Length: 181
Length: 162
Image (cartoon, rainbow over all chains, first blue to last red; front, side):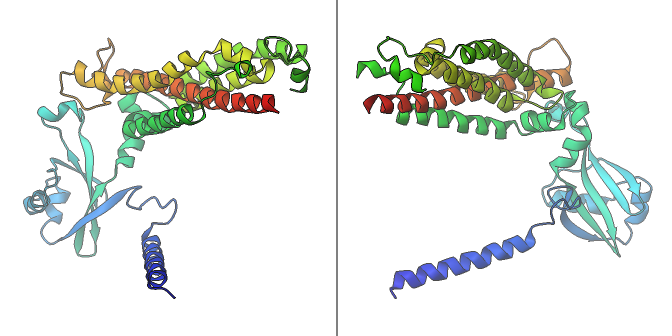
C-alpha cells in the first residue's frame, strides 16, 4: 500500500471519529431547553448571599461585576418567573434606541443546588414571544425569514440569481433561432 | 409536439391543438393573479416571494407547453427576462440600503423600521418585508422562466438537427 493511501485512510478515520463525537453533542430534536431553542449556559456563581437580593428584585453587585468582567452587556432590571428562576432585562440606552427600541429579555438565572447558573436567551425566544408586536405581521415564518433573518434571505436570493446567470452563460440558446441554422 | 414536425414549412411552429391553446390562454392570467396574491399574502398567511415567484414562472412554462417555445418566447423576450432577474436582487439590496440612507446612518442594513414611510415603526417593518418579498418573487420568476426556456430551446434545436 502506498503512503498516500494509508494517510488518506487515517484521515478518513479521524474525520469519522470527529463527526461521531460532534453528533453526540447535538441536542435532542425538538428539545425546548436546548441551547439553540432556549438558552445557553455562560457560567456558574456561588448562590450564597445572592438569593436575598434576587428575591427583593435587586441585581446583586457581585453578579453584575462577573457579567461585566466577561464583556457581556449589563442587566438593569430583574424579574422573578417562578421559584428559583429569574429573568434579567437589558434597558436600551439613548444611543442604542435605534437598534433595540424596547427593553429586552437577556439573561436567565436558574438555581441549581447551591449554585446559580447564568444562562443567556437565544434569539428564538425573542422571535417567538415578541415578533408579532415588533413587526405587526401575524405570520411567524414570514417575519423570521424576511426580517430577523433578512441577510439569510438576501443570500438565498443571490444563490437563485447566480443559478440564473450560470444558465444564461452556459446553456444560452434563446438568442439563436433554430431556423437560422 | 409530433404535429410540429408536419408543419415545419411555416415560419413559426405551432402545436395546433385548439383546446390546449384556448384553455392555457384562459388559465394563464388567473395563474399569474394567484401568484401575485401569494406574494402579497405572504405576511398574513402561507406564501411569500419564493412560492409566488415559482407559481408565476409556472405560468410561462404553461405558455411554452401550449404554444411552443418560439411563440411563447416572443411573448416574454430574453432581454426583459435578463433585466428582471437582476432587478429583483436590486430591489432587495436597495431596500436594505434605503434603511441606512433614510436614517442617516443610524440604523443597520435591512432594518426596515427606518424607511421613510408615513406609518409607525412596526408597520414600516411589515411594509419593508412586503417590498423585499416582491424583489424575491421577481428574481425567482425570471430565473425559473430563464432555466426552462433555455432547456426547452435546446431540446427543439436538437430535434431540428435530426
